[in-house]
Amino acid sequence: MYKIAVMGDWDSIYGFKALGLDTYPVTDPEEAEKTLHALADDKTAVIYITEALAEKIEKTISEYSASPLPAIILIPGASGNTGKGLALVKKSVEQAVGSDIIFGND
Image 1 (cartoon, helix red, strand yellow):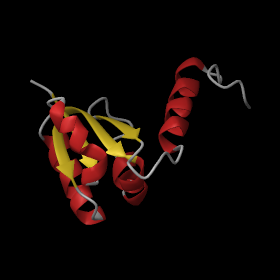
Image 2 (cartoon, rainbow, N blue to C red):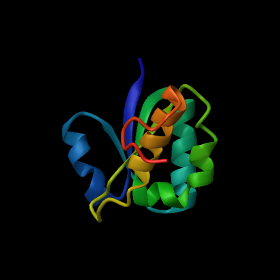
Image 3 (cartoon, rainbow, N blue to C red):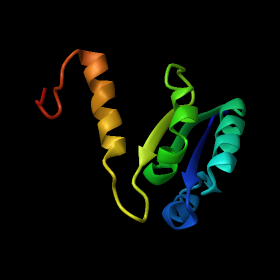
Image 4 (cartoon, rainbow, N blue to C red):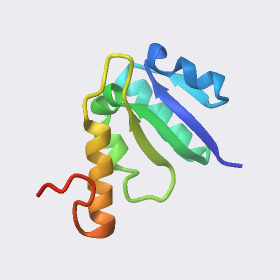
C-alpha cells in the first residue's frame, strides 16, 4: 500500500501527524536528501515538502520530476508562502494543456 509523507521543519508539519500522515521533521539539506530518497524507495506515493526545505534540495527533487511516483508537492511552511509551489503547479498545468489557463499570463 502506498503512503503519504510530509517533510519540513517541525513547526510547519506537526499538524499533518494528526491527519495520519507520516511526518519527517528535517531542516538539514543532506538529511532531507537522504530522507527523500528513502521515501521514494519505500513506495511513498505523495511527498509534501515545505517550500523552504525544497529550496535547499531543488536538484534532488528534480531527479523525480519525470517519474510518476513519488508525486512531490510543495507546501507553504510556518514562515510563509514563497510562491514556489504555486509556480510549479502553474508550470505543470501549462505543460498538460499547452497554455496558461490559470492565470492568463504569457
